[in-house]
Length: 262
Image (tube, rainbow, N blue to C red):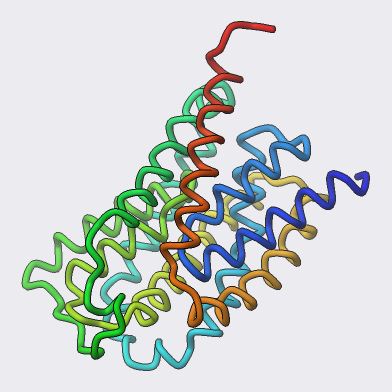
């Protein structure tokens, strides 16, 4: 692999690691970087999932102080995340390359709109620095199970925007819980979903053996930096950048796939 392609892969993965730790949506950077480096969309997606898994684990470790209070919530959401990650990765592996290529612009647009919604919605007190409270787990746990399962299926299949989906779900029953605690739970669950998908992609031989270690190392460094930065920067500022990037990428992918032939 030449230096230009390696730099694209490493740069995209490092930035994705930072963004995922701060706000979510980093796949919208690392996925197009992998495509720009010459990977086809389906292996680029699988390689991206494998490469970002250790980065998610690194971020989770950096959030261990916040996680100490929320093992009960993690226990509720563990099983649907595991099952959904398995289902989503299996769905990707049986999806024909041409079908996935056609779906990618729509998947990127969905992830981008989720980020846009997160920025436009009114800020919760916890996001403004309000006092931390305890999670109010809903009286209908089956509904939370179902919603987290569906989010995890999407995460196992594509992954971009999954952090935003989980933050929205956690916020719905999080009360005035501090945003960093929500981020910590989201990071652990994303690690689980990505990890399950990564194992499936590795066993299926769907990942690029050269690109994966390059992206993995860069993403870990980025995630450790991002976990520190997350406590010092407003996540919405990062998300506005990613929203703009996602809209441009959606247009570019859509034109490449559905525009008139050159």
